[in-house]
Length: 498
Image (cartoon, rainbow, N blue to C red; front, side, top):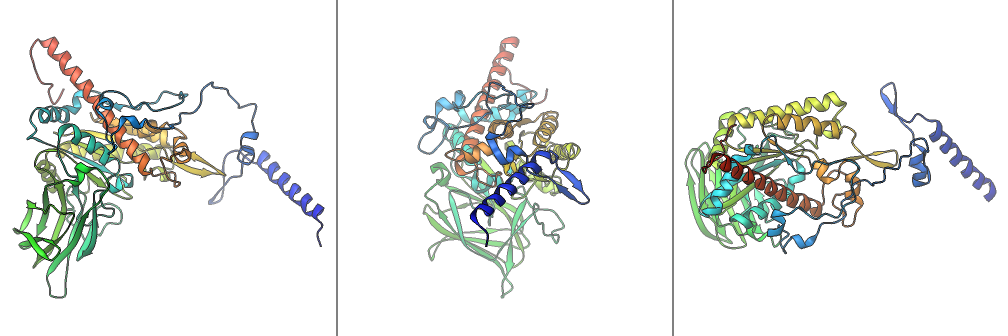
């Protein structure tokens, strides 16, 4: 039988052995055949009690840490107040050790001509329309980030509704719940693609919903829609519905309130976008029926005028789908909707799989080709690319930022700016290296413990910040117009191409 003293001595010996191994083991991971091996460092085991004198540097400043957002900036909906449109967010921060690029970076602010001129027009004529689309990965699911941008724009320029959404979304928008879906099959060009879809006609949302054939040989689908009591009020108060569909035979679309038919619309054979009347109630159902197969590319909940901002979240996507889509259909869809600003937010899903600097630069060049495709098909829109956020992984017993994010964001910025698009560095906006750990551990938390995704509060902060930075860029654009007018002595517009 072991005595307490012997057991205690065993623990001390074990701890001392572990410490010696950490002291003399290689600091970097090393390969042994197909395996990569590493061991705890003394700082991992002892934390703040361990200081390596030869490497300790007193910088006199601390790492940037976002502690809170001044809630006085927002109203009860969480939207930007008028003062926030013209002044930076007063974030409580510590002085960062390096300069961070937190604004929207452009080679020439005139590259946003189409968007800002459209805003100027709608500011003077409320009967006009402006449309924006925000593509991204799972950070956008549930209308996150986009909803704050949309509400800030709608509050200033008018408009209602949350815009386009899939008929069977993976995550429903914050303002509307989908339930009792029947006869609907979701297909996407991103993620696990159905290889039976050869024509690549997925629409501008990069996904469609197929109607499933029933026992009677008919193709039909049904879904119940219910307005949620949260989200932004303007997003919930849509008045019209626009449905985009491609059917091999005429399709009937009908709306019901409980068991009562409210309205019916017949879609001709082929690809069409038609407006439908929707009931002013909190819950209704939609039924689609056709004698042959049909694809529903999406439906938009909106108002006849004002700002509309579409949220297109693609779980698992890296942003490489635009060159895969059918060019003719994608071009017609973009032209039909008349987008003046296209936002693309990708890169996070690639970060964990980057092998080295060369790999990161190849990914950035691939993103550049996606931008080339969008500019070729629809050159009249301004382009904004949002780079990946900080992300962290476990190294030993501590969480550290992925080491290749700085290389990736530098390469992405180069590719984006060289094409005349804007670049917003979300990595720097968060606070740079180590900021994801700060976002997870702060109170309230701005990121969840997967050290990848934002909490609703964090996503809200990013969305509000995006709206603010676009407003700041708009002020720069207006200043440029005034400067050019003064030089020329006449009122002129900035050309779309310089």
